[in-house]
Image 1 (cartoon, rainbow, N blue to C red):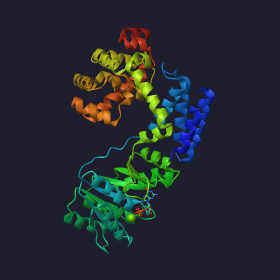
Image 2: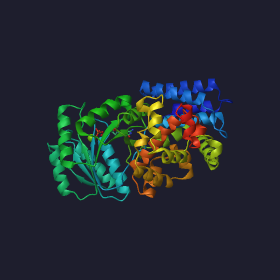
Image 3: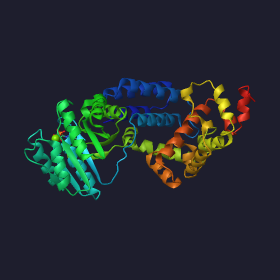
Image 4: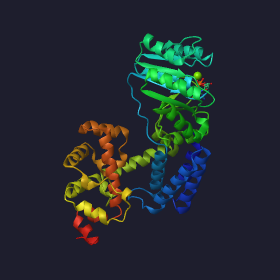
Length: 431
Ligand SMILES: Nc1nc2c(ncn2[C@@H]2O[C@H](COP(=O)(O)OP(=O)(O)O)[C@@H](O)[C@H]2O)c(=O)[nH]1
Ligand SMILES: [Mg+2]
């Protein structure tokens, strides 16, 4: 899907120097590639600005070459653009699939059945497409192929009634409902889906979208969300469209996360959405591996990589030293930033919160405290477990840290680092 970007990155990698001209060329190439993949122009322009700014203004950390530094920036920006990794729960659940004609709903129903059956669940497929005569047979056949229980009623007219009966008849851990599509989301479809939803009360309502609609996936996701309340999107036909990238980005930016992608017509052609995989592909595995290895080596000696940077430990010192003293409040008043750029009022933090932050930090590795940007979904999970807190709390801490770091970066880092607030207050004429 992102073959073009891969080529552009290869072209950049093969240059002897990563000078301004090379960076500009890379940004231009990636821009063109993303627009060809039908990614929203304003998002593309934002991303190019960010890459350009960071790659040209930041010094490469010692130990990384300039080229490696640029690649790392590109890598993280693309990952950001592609949104979050899916969070698929492997537990008993009811799933409703909805979408327009030909989106791949029925095929995906079969794929999901296969996915959960392989993970040890008893799976049932329910044919609630009463609109198309052949829909019943298609799903029945797929059920056989993937070894799932099947429920359908030939010549049924009311989908919600079929689902009602299926729920009584079926003994499955994971029940997947295949619904009817239309050419567009009209009132009839809206009503039909709402009725099915009310009867099934599914844990997951996935909108199935074909990759070839590109960035218009965003509008569609918003419309279906209004109509039935979707919990995620499955983008199909990623194997056969050049606009898949645009569709993924559009969904992720509509607030509806992509959960799975369909990559072919066969039952096993379903993947959990993971942007890191895509980006790894783009950067080229060997390059990326050597880059990450290098970063890891540097991590062993954090002084070298992040000299002078504001770390999680500094953050801890700081909240412990200034909260409750009223100092932070005074300071905030003096800062030349708009209100919305400020961290959620640090001075209001309670002892309790400081305590829980401390416990969370204790569950982080040295690497994570040095550079919290490595804290991905699975690390968040581990830290939450280890500290007996929730993922939300861990995320909140990381966010809080980031906001503070952004603010601190604008000050003399060294004086902040020593926790010497007096220094800073002095500079502001308050000491
Ligand atoms: N290449 C490819 N084809 C797919 C994929 N998913 C579905 N299809 C094809 O798209 C067509 C419509 O699929 P179907 O499941 O019947 O769509 P529905 O109308 O939404 O139920 C069929 O020919 C499928 O084989 C996919 O991920 N890749
Ligand atoms: Mg169908």
